[in-house]
Image (cartoon, rainbow, N blue to C red; front, side, top):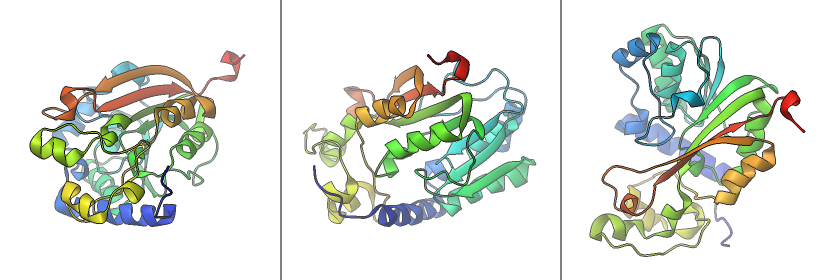
Length: 271
């Protein structure tokens, strides 16, 4: 496997600035929810997304969110956190990008919501004590971290027994294909060995052609690290789904996303 050409701190800083710029440019995942969505959530009508197009099943959440301590992990942007807060949860949003966190703060101020924001690296949740949360909502974002197993270990630590981790991510197989050929010519051609790394397996010129200048670095990870990593951390998987992007070339052949629900066992349920 190719050795990374960038340190983790280099990637963290680069991705922080990339997301800060995307906020300025109005990227889809940086646009805060509208007031109407907050009003509906207050009335119990809401949906949030671990993946791009498919709502997260409501039975993956507690039946009543009032008083539930939720960590929206690498989930800034003024979208999921405000919805959960409006539904009654005690929400903390943790993200690498200060500009993304400001979007949550703006919605909180606009709607009179209590949302705590914390900046940091998703691999290091030392800002939080053990057993601080009942639920972690982690939408497609660990593709921006060079390693994913530390994320699962930290999630397990900060969850209370019986708490759940909801995770969405890109199907790793997406990264094996030449994305430029797929998008521009409709040609599906295998190009990269998995696990794929933007920081090692592609030139800056190629990245710019694909994603535009200064896009965040992405990493595919393996299913062994995604699912086996959660199991090794101590979680029990209780839910799984796949999802496709609308009108996507690769999505015509396989699901673009996977999502899992994993529970930290209570002492009474172990053994």
